[in-house]
Amino acid sequence: MAGRQRVRRRLRHLPINMLAPNILTVMALGAGLTSMRFALQERWHLAVAAVLIAAVLDGLDGRLARLLKGASKFGAELDSLSDIVCFGVAPAILLYVWVLQEVGGVGWIIVLAFAVCCGLRLARFNTSLDDPDRPAWASNYFTGFSAPVAASLALLPLFLDFQVGGDIFRSPAIAMPWTVFLAFMMVSRIPTFAFKKIRVRRDLVLPTLLLVGLVFAALVSYPWMTLTGGAILYLASVPFSVRSHRRLAAGWKQANETGDEAG
Image (cartoon, rainbow, N blue to C red):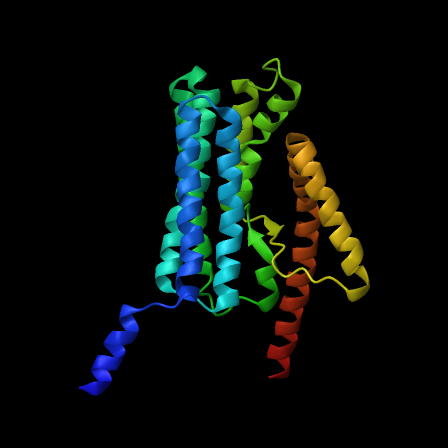
């Protein structure tokens, strides 16, 4: 009886390390929902900023959960729900209200495909985590574009429009194929860098910190130009990720075949 009472007391009070990652996830969900509100009000800069804030919070919650050892099944389910809203629904609604509603049903089909592909991508990612045959190096790569990356890249036409103006990039002829491309990339099998386990050599710590400071200064002074540059650099990294993944996969396959023959 005393043991049961101790368990009940422990369940009534959750440590903060169990709650902190979930708090960030709820904040990200709120940012995604707020982005749709700003989009409906045609406050485009704030709508874009809300999606980007959601992406930053999404990147922090998982890392914080691992750091504080507060990962849980509840947190994982909440994170998936937040991701589909923030990176599937919110960018789709934003793009539709911004320009794709001009082409009526076709525009709606395209944004619907984007949101559905985001959901499929998240489902595939969650199930792949339980694959026992997955090699250790595979965690350095995503299969296709991750949901936050695809959502951020979907806003690239808005980044360009904010810089250039004149509605040059606010055109269905640009937004439609771009959105279709990103939807395809989310469900594709193309490997992309995950940038999860980047290690910095000790002699490069100070230059790295300096670079981070310069990027932050550029982001504050020229936000849309800096974000555009980041999007271009990420797209340019895709061929390198494909080549790197193929090389590692070939080596892993050869090592397994050699092991089977030896056995």
